[in-house]
Image 1 (spheres, rainbow, N blue to C red):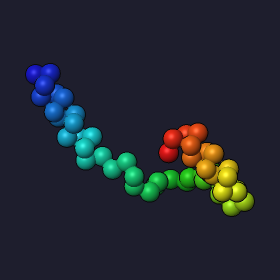
Image 2: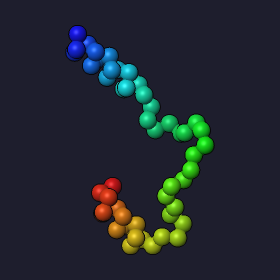
Image 3: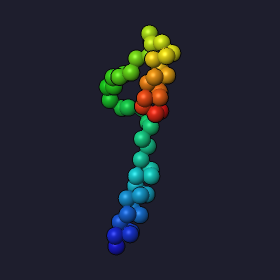
Length: 49
């Protein structure tokens, strides 16, 4: 029973689209207008993105 419950939850969350555009009001939290390339690389290596 536990196994089938996990399978059901897996199929439900597999169909969940995480990367759809937001439907409500959204706010941009990261601005890249006046940043230097060194600052961007520092952030890239620090966060591991």
